[in-house]
Image 1 (tube, rainbow, N blue to C red):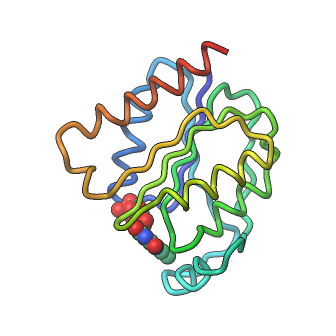
Image 2: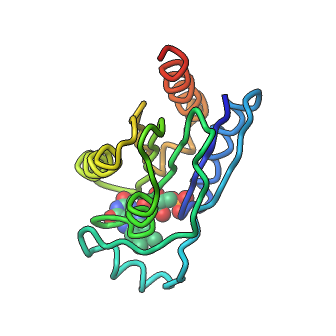
Length: 161
Ligand SMILES: Cc1cc2nc3c(=O)[nH]c(=O)nc-3n(C[C@H](O)[C@H](O)[C@H](O)COP(=O)(O)O)c2cc1C
């Protein structure tokens, strides 16, 4: 099964998650693509934009064809992450098997995740699983296991279809 890992806004902790997901799929065909906004806005520009509900900014197009499983690794940004909104709105997601991973630093992420799920489902994606990861968890011993268990679960879901 070909696996695509899309990621955005990942600092050091995000990169560790990416590595665990990549490792878990070592034996599959894995491609990793960083989502790139067409225009860069800098920290304060992004921060301001992240509070505007539904705001989307365009990202460079990604070819989603031919992947059995697509991971979307995204950060929690205030109300929403405009480049992630831009990716969702700008791509055909019908029939895409998606696994969502959202990282955050504090508070709760459930409402945020629910909005993302609604958006991708609205575009026709099949959501195979979602995982939220608090930044401080990344330092814990069993963290890699948790991520890889999630990967196993979404991949077996995919294979069982
Ligand atoms: C513009 C912006 C807004 C953010 N807003 C939130 C927020 O509301 N809640 C939160 O827990 N983390 C917030 N963060 C932190 C990100 O979630 C964090 O950077 C992300 O989880 C990835 O961690 P990493 O950069 O160490 O890889 C924000 C980061 C940025 C750049």
